[in-house]
Amino acid sequence: MKGDLVLAIDNGTQSVRALLFEAEGELVARSRVPLDAYTCPNPGWHEHDANGFWEAVCDACRKLWHDYPQLRARVAGVAVTTQRATVINVDTRGDPLRPAITWLDQRKSRDIPPMSALWRTAFGVARVAGTIRYFQREAEANWIRTEQPDVWKQTHKYLLLSGFLLYKLCGRFVDSIGSQVGYVPFDYKNLRWASHNDWKWQALRIERELLPDLVPPGSVIGEITAAAADATGIPRGTPLVAAAADKACEVLGAGCLDPSIGCLSYGTTATINVSSSRYLEAAPFIPPYPAAMPNAYNTEVQIFRGFWMVSWFKEQFGACDEEVLREIPPGAMGLMLQPYWSPGLKQPGPEAKGAIIGFGDVHTRAHVYRAIFEGIAYALREGKERIERRGRQRIAMLRVCGGGSQSDAALQLTADIFGLPAARPHVDEASGLGAAIDAAVGLRIHPDFAAAVQAMTRVTATFEPQDAHRALYDALYERVYKKMYPRLRSLYEAIREITGYPAE
Image (cartoon, rainbow, N blue to C red):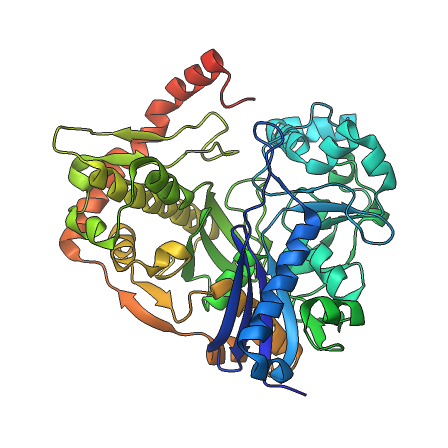
């Protein structure tokens, strides 16, 4: 092996980071390039120039070598992790045919493929016909094929962002099993493309030949090509190892191998995940997604627009800092927030809206700020309990990642609301570290995932629940928060019926 460092490229929603890790999991160098060129050609649309993602990867890598020229020769291998469910149509040369449609896009297809009578009957009996229609309308492939048939006719491969970047790096149309999150005909239980008789081929207008080959996380895909080396500065011939989607890598990078450890992410979308060798659906027909390890799954509950709400609040009402969060007492003087700023599919349903109740003349914007943090944590606790019921296994501790994890006050209220220890991983780049773990295993720096996680992950601070705060939060959660959505749901449905928002 020619080097002792692993390069992890993390193409998130807000930026691309190039990260260099040692075999012990220490982050020795990083560079960051913001992603701010997203476009919204129509209300609810969310796109980005596909080549712009690649250019940001190149810029991040070149910036890394500029700032740390002595480290370039020490790179043993590369792994890539990306935002989930962002799709790109490319031609035979691998050139994008239209802008990438990102995971934040909310367009819906007017024309959905017909399903056979057999499947329609089966879905009706299972009471999931609405879920399947939602799946079909949300699928980007159905929209592109209906609205831009010339683009679809020229499409040689239909790729997730991960597959596009891997092609640019090694010249092969190949992707990791661990990156398959989105509206694609993937068999989440068996971790492969769906069999020929699977209902997804009828629900989606995608032919098998349009999809890339798949390999397990930790597999060597190929080598950095001469063209990619010229563009990025990564040495030509450097091994490229399959990693996984950013959330899967974050769970791995937080050291969550055991289903008794819950991984909370206070990111743009707030989530709670557990990793397991068992296939476990948090809700019927909402599959777990592939983990960043072979033959494993991550069961997840999402709060869409989770910690985005913190940024939204600061933009709309002015900045608040850590000290402001500490000044407001637990429970925010009875101000309760339900964080459904964007609708869901099942829990909550597509009619859901956000709500804040309990206002009084004592409340300030600082109380609202704390109520946002608490509302997100309440919703994630509800997700935790759903996972526990479905899996019949208790979650005993938490690892907290994402931008919000850097706040001591946020971690303390998390521990108090969940009634569990909440620990912060030793690096704030958990998804990048997860990709580096995949690379370390693929390059045989560590013999297996258990050894790699033991060597490369640890925590720097653990926050224990405080009894008095825990009792207060338990009462508010059980007697108020859990009753908010059921009691407000009919009002949300009325608002939707009257205003047409959110659209059905």
